[in-house]
Length: 277
Ligand SMILES: C[S@@+](CC[C@H](N)C(=O)[O-])C[C@H]1O[C@@H](n2cnc3c(N)ncnc32)[C@H](O)[C@@H]1O
Image (tube, rainbow, N blue to C red; front, side, top):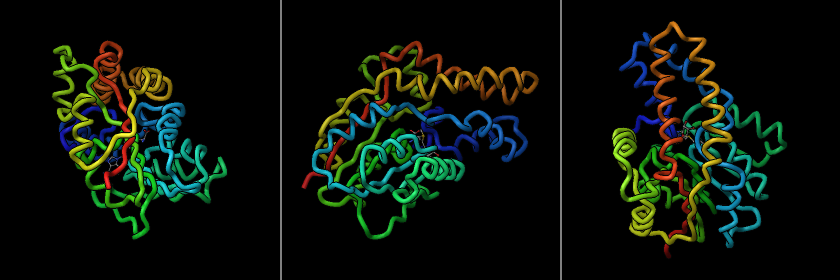
């Protein structure tokens, strides 16, 4: 989804490119350093929770005892670690931002999961995963980067038979959004669809839906927007004299404020599916 400019799930390089190109940062390394300062050590890089990961995982009744799992766009890896807690299987976790991969490796070592995880810095547009398939593909807040339909279609080739996929996708919860929020998402994620439309897309891509559910609002706040908003406030003080930093912080705050106002109109929805025979 090349045109996305919103923070949730936005590609890091795209975000940085936007900074370097359109804002007043003079060079990429300053922009990257500022991005890291805003985002470093946040527990997640998008909405989610152990309870939601567990709920989606519990819909998979046909998994082997030790499933082989692929977690795409794993970020700092909270859901990867949660999956390791929920299963005795192994996980290949990929993300194209090396600091997240390093963070996940450190966290998995600290929690005693090092043997069951293989974290790789890789681009989802150019996956190189060898010949062994996966019993489950997982992607929280990341399939939009390829596009919902394209991700479903392309990732199928990495699935074993039987195999499953569980993904979250930013979704309209109403067919008539308020103009302010419609304009915001039209500018930032025009491909966003309703649940009904996504279920049709799933069918068109050759899958059956096992189940779906909307992530609760607490999944947006507890591990994502609340820590991010505190960070934004701190940095607004620190960079009060730097307009380029303040502009970035303002756009992060705007996204948070809009969710506060319109959380009943859009959300993240977990879709749990398997390819039709
Ligand atoms: C919204 S974050 C979700 C991270 C994590 N799943 C979570 O829920 O906390 C999206 C992730 O996709 C990664 N990403 C963006 N573009 C990517 C690409 N082309 N290939 C692999 N990962 C990518 C970002 O670095 C980021 O970690």
